[in-house]
Image (cartoon, rainbow, N blue to C red; front, side, top):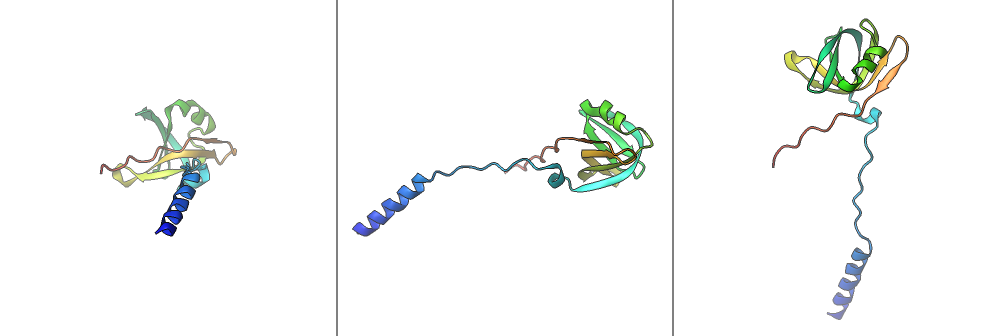
Length: 126
């Protein structure tokens, strides 16, 4: 009986001596967080809605980016510019892709802009 008490006390001490430290993973890099890339020609810029601006590519893909960056994006890629958009896609109305842009690259001149990853989707209630 005494052995079990000593063994149990030793295990409890070792467990207490090494406190658990919650490790927060680093934020995803642009490369890890982007699911897909989409190439196309900028057909038009869309009016801002809900804090997001956008552009329509000739492939039918709608690209969202922060409204605060609208002037910068328009300076990067004019209507008619060939672009590559890396981002997180989801299906929008009429079965068209909407891409939450994380990086937009102008394929004509090599310029690019990077945006913060979109927030994760809300959790389902328990």
